[in-house]
Length: 314
Ligand code: UDP
Image 1 (cartoon, rainbow, N blue to C red):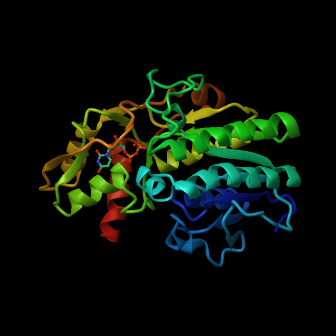
Image 2: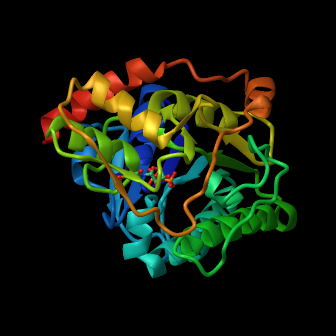
């Protein structure tokens, strides 16, 4: 192992995004220390890294003190339940990992003189009154609604990150992640992509919430991870949106999933969950200009990979 090999700590390494990030970092020559408590992550997502000398795994809740003896160059803080269904089930853990977990991860970065990246979210914009959402928009969040535990924890995490940056001069990065999809999403995490794809593959009714007029914009996971890697390696310390600006309604999305899976499913309309954002699309001007990044994978190509993955899991 070369002395110059960088070491990265990834919290939430057994999750959907954390595991793809760990793969990319190992592929780019990093030694990766993954941490996860498996509350929503899965050992299946990292099993292929087992035995790799450049990957070490620690089963730990990152709200507890993180003790590492080795030098660390980068801390990527990805640990958190991340689907509305999960944070309804784990509101306290969601609040704790966004607040106490971010504090511990920042403390580790400060102690190791490492650069820190926070996985923040489009949810900090809440149900947005500005569309598409630029980074300068402050958001419209219901603090006490069902999404409040996630939205406010991530907003606190951004504030804590800027606190460590300003007070302790830690080099920090903040990515605001918009809806992302791809292999390793949990089949039953309640999010729209696994829900629609698994329903369509089983020829069961595809559950569109509300009238399906609410919009989202879906980014394929490899595009997202590349954007996040570039942000970490950049010199920019304010928040950057990473996501795909191709926007569609949930009804259009359901019809597209039924079409590409050649499913016999019909659409079943279900009640709209409380505080479900009516519209969401990232303004990615900053990512384009600062990072030279834009999404490359089409919805058709991304869905093909995702459907192939879910077909094996069903
Ligand atoms: N949704 C839906 N049917 C489902 C699951 C989700 O119509 O079975 C809708 C949900 O109401 C939201 C959108 O799909 O408008 C995206 O939901 P998801 O849970 O994936 O994440 P969100 O973007 O709301 O955080």
